Image 1 (cartoon, rainbow, N blue to C red):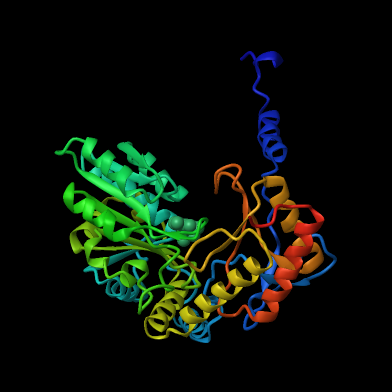
Image 2 (cartoon, rainbow, N blue to C red; image 1 turned 30 degrees about the vertical axis):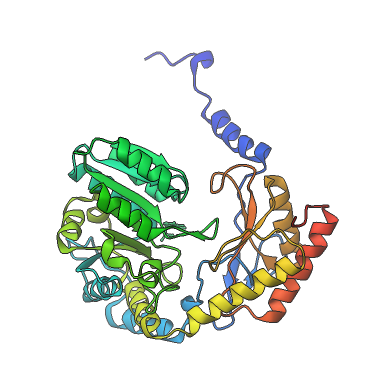
Length: 413
Ligand SMILES: Cc1ncc(COP(=O)(O)O)c(C=O)c1O
C-alpha cells in the first residue's frame, strides 16, 4: 500500500502546538497550582508549585465554601463507610452500584428541596448536561430558553439536546418574556437558569421567572450549584430562601462545593426523576459515586439542614472582606452574595496579580479568564468562608493594594 506523501500528511503535532500557542498569546493559558489542604486548618494549605518543598499558603478561591470538606462529621462518616463497605460502588446504579447510601441521600435531597424525588450524578456538570439533553429529547419540539450567563454544563446539555434554543439577556425578565411571547404557543418550553451566578455574584429573579413560566406554560430548570448548603433555613438554596422551590420543575445542585465532597443531583417530581433515570445516558452508563463519598455528603447535608453557624460565618466573612477591599479603594464588583469578585479587565494582568500573590504573599487565588467570563472582564474571584479570619483578610487587602500600586492598576471609581 502506498503511503501518503509528506505534503498531504496532517501535521498533528503542529496543530496541537498551535492550539496551545493561541492560549499563551491571549494570556489565558491555564496553570494548575499544586497544593495540599491542611485538614483541620483550612484555608491553610501547602503549595508545591515552583518551590523546593511545600510552602504555606492561604486558599482564597476554594468552592468548599463552608469548609465542610474537613468537618469532623463528614470525615467520620467517610471513614466509617470505607471500613464498612470498601472503596468503590462497583457498578452503575442499574448493575451492582446502587447502595443503601445512594438511596438514603436521594431521599435526603428530595426532602431538602421539598420535592418527591431526587437523582444522583457523578458531578453537577453531568447532572446539567444529562438532564437538559434528555428533557428536550423527551419533549419533541421543545424550545429551551437559556440565560446568557448559564454555566458551560447547561450549554453542553442544551447543545446535545439538539433542540431550538433562545438565549435571554442575563436576568432580564422583559427580554425573556419577549422571547416566550414570540415562540409557538403549542411548543413545549423549558427555562434554564441559575440562582447565584458565581462569576458575577448576583442572583436571578426566580419568582419573576416562575410567573413567566406560568403565563407561557413553560417548565423551569434551576441550577442552585452556588447556593445549596449556603442559603435558606436548611441550606435548600435561594429557592428555599425565597419560598419558591415548589414553583420550580427541576432544581439541580452540586455536592462538591458547599457540601464539601463530590457529586451532583436533580430534585423534581417522581415522574420526571423516573424519566431521567430511565433515559439519560449520563446517568445510566457510568459507575455510580463511591459510597464513601455519598456517606460524606449524607453527613454534610444532614448537618447543614440544622446548623446555621457555617452559613452565618460565611455571610459575615463575605461582608467583612467586601467592606475591607472597598474601603481600600479596590474595584469590588457589586453583588449580594458570598462571592467577592474584583475586576481587573485584562487576562495578562489578572494572571500576573495571581502569580505575585502566590509567590510573594502566600495568597492563592486563581485568575478568572475567558471563556469562563467574557473577554475584557477578567477578574479575581475570592470566596471567603467561615474559616477565613480577620487577620487573613487584612493581609490579603494589604497585598492587593501593594500590587495594584506596583502594576499601576485602576482603583475603584
Ligand atoms: C453554575 C454551575 N453549574 C454546574 C457546575 C458543575 O458542578 P460540579 O463542579 O459539581 O461538576 C458548576 C461548577 O463550577 C457551576 O459553576
